[in-house]
Image (cartoon, rainbow, N blue to C red):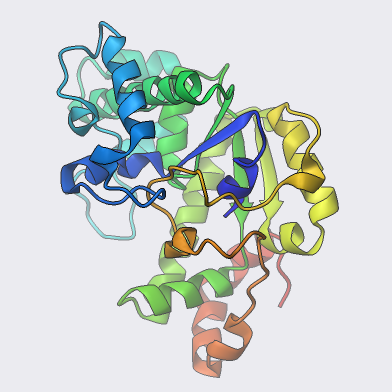
Length: 292
C-alpha cells in the first residue's frame, strides 16, 4: 500500500511489483486499471517506449523481457539461499560484470536488472514522473538493480511485525506457522545481508505500524528521502488511475484511501502459533524493533 500512497504524489509513479510484469503479459492478467494488461493504454505506451531503444527493438514486446531473477532449482534446502542470492550479497558492479562472463546465473540476473531499469525509464517518460516505485519486495531484485545503477537507486526497507506477516501468510497460502515464520525470517535476513554493501544514506528503514500511527511524521520523512517536497498531507492511496501489477488483492478495492493499521493477528493467532513464532522468529522480530 505504501507504493500506492506515494504514487499519488505528482512526481512519483508506482509500477507495483515489476518482477511480475512478464508473467502478466504471458497470462494477459488484469492491470490495476481493470483492463487486461495487453489492452492497457499505459503499458502499451511503455511498451512503445521500450521498443524505441535499439537494444530492445528485436524483442517481442514486454512479454519477452524477463523481469524476475531466477534463483535456480539446484539448492540443498528450500530455506537455504541460492547461488545467485549468495553472490549478490557480496558482489560489486565490477564482480557482476566479470562473473557474468562465466556464470549464466549471474549474467541472467544482470540482464534481468537491466530490463527492469529500461522499463522504469520508459515508465518515467510515459508518466512524466522522475521517480518510479517498484515494490517487488525481493532482496535479490533490488541488489541486482542497485549494482547496475547505484546512482539511481534508493531503497525503502518497509517492515511489519513478523507475527502479522506470518498470520497473513496462513490466510493466503497453504503454509503452516513454522514455514510462514521461517520464510519471513529468511527474507528479512537476506535483505539485511544485501544492504550491508549499500551506503546507509541509500536505505530508509520504515515500520508499517509507525507509518499507520504517525503518518504526519513518517510520510514527510519518506518524501525527503526520495528527494521530493510538499504534498505530504494530500497523499492518499491511489487506486483509480494507477496501473500496478502484482501486489495485494486490496489494490482493486477502490474505497480504501488510507493505509490502515491491521493488528488482527493478535486475535487470530493461537497460543500455539505464537509459541512457534517465538521459537523461530522472535530474535529477528526484536532486531527489527518489535518487543514481545
